[in-house]
Image (tube, rainbow, N blue to C red; front, side, top):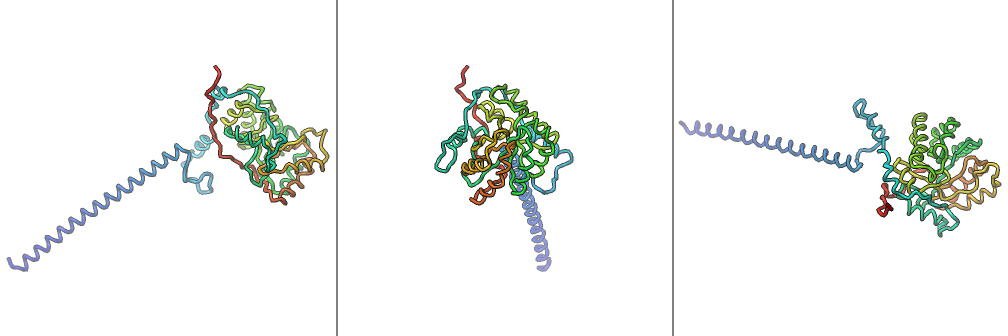
Length: 337
């Protein structure tokens, strides 16, 4: 064998060995990529499991992007969101049924905020109850609607003109008797709150009756307006720890007030100038105003109040207040047998 032939054979063998090594490295690289990809998928799956357990997710909710769910899945998901576990009345019954006496009172702190409401907020806020809003230059307008006295349309006109959105707490009887007004409240961006069916004192009826009075109106609004109520105001403002736990278990935020005055009797209305001075004089940061829509005086002074509050730097936003509070109240451990 000549030297040239030997060299040629050696070179061929080197080339063949190089190809084998290259193919082996490619296979190792592909295998490594598959492992990394698999680990990423496992990590993503694990994060989804954690999100599902904690209720947290990086995925925005109620966005405008195209829904990629399969046909029939969307309705199922919505039904799951709507449903809450039925209240455990036995556990709720362990809370005190005694009516809690309360009111904004006359004592104010250095910022003009009701001392009673601040104390009540600290004590009962854990039940998703709100007596006063955080200390910001904001005022929240709420109206109670037990029955119609011809003033609601005027109030809605003023709110529309001033670009203010309020909360209207309505009873079932009011909703049935005034469907056009209720629809207008919804269409113009106001919040329609639950003020019960029948307007009973919740501390004088059973938990079953209280749940019925709440959910009868809740269901009627869903069935007839496709509107889900989320805010609740007690008739007469009467509540107990039991009722607070019940309403929380039903998914409601309970809205009280840090100012109200004697405006509920149509036959005994305060003169407009005096009423204006009383309402305006109580201005405070984080105020939740309770006004009755049966009052002709309120509809007369509302526009000026809004203008003057804004002139003093107050914002009158739609109700979206939420303290950072414990969402699940503790069951007391010192229960009597």
